[in-house]
Length: 189
Image (cartoon, rainbow, N blue to C red; front, side, top):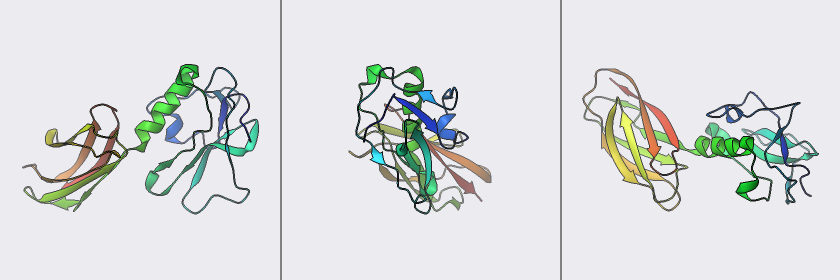
């Protein structure tokens, strides 16, 4: 099973993956992501509907029974089978943008508890960053913690909620090397 001409056809073009942060041009329903034809082993798309919680995202138009980008799963996590075996130098601009979108989409964060008063100790967990990179967490415009990720790009650290007025605040984590971002919400009561 091989791909054909290095193009993908989004199954769900409205998915943010194809728009954020870079818009992927889809001409005639397809987008060229590699300049020459790749020769790659691909995974067969199951004939049955996707498993519960998954949405197929893109197909190799030459072999619609195969998936280039397999699925978006539970909690907006990305599960990707990148189905082309070619060097990064052969990526088109659209291909490079799509790869960047996939990497940026992959990071996810959560806080526990999700609400509390200033001074509350919160556990911050995040995944999908580069391994052993510094992640800086900001809440209400204030840096609340900075820490290195583990080898697999995850963090699990506590911080104290700063003195902020009541309201909903974005807790934003950014990887220093990868540039990946993950956000979640904390409510100050």
